[in-house]
Image (cartoon, rainbow over the protein chains, first blue to last red):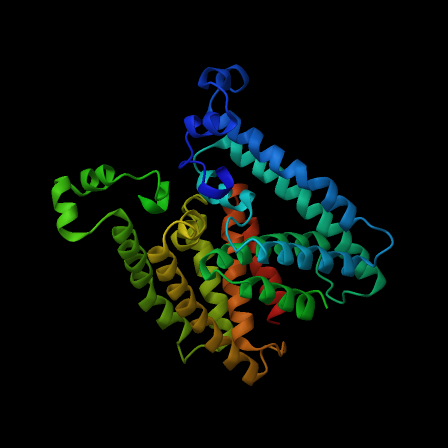
Length: 177
Length: 177
């Protein structure tokens, strides 16, 4: 519900009703909505992390190809879902970063973990010569992640995969070529 | 208030109270909150547009330098404001794109106008040889805008200008070099 409708638009009552539990039990587990929001952020990221690690760390595939496959797979999945919702981490970043330190810090931590996985692939691809760009891999990885979040943002407005295709074309046709 | 707190978190009562007008007069001018939101998006973009056109269209400055100056000026302004709020167009894109067609269409239109200004600079800089990247200027311009929005998103979470500095370093040190 946070992903589809946003944090502010989703009340605790909506959450307990959807879960089919009485409102009182919410407070047995979570101090407040913000603490719940921080847990939701962790659950969302940690659910996707093993697949991300497996794909980006696969030693049987050249590192640049792993990165490209990752983004192409994401675009394919997003295309079939109608360009809605985007990335919950990105959505909550813009909605909550100025309003909840707890949520902001979880988001920052997960973005760093995510970026570090890109960084390893980029460093390996620079070593093999598949990427000629000599900028530091950590810098390129951060830029890549942020640009991906920006492409997802624009996709929400355009309701098309053009921003995602543009991302892939520029990143793999120029920046990391 | 939409920029600082978000659309959903800001009620019509908050708006009329801040403006010092009775609630009834809101409905003399706007059919509903959504129609007001669409007008706010136009006012926000149109307020900045003349300065943007002047800076990016300045024939006395080489085109690539205009682009770089634009982003550096933005980073300087954002740095002095504590990394809060970001870009209202980006914020409302993630919050409202799935919930208001009227607001989504205004956002899409302004992003296209903004991107077209980048495109002209990029095309001119390719002609003069300042940019060696031969990808279509429209593609690079869209990517640039989306990546900038992504850098602003990440800045909100990091509460630092590192994502903006990374953007400038990668864009002007590699992609548009």
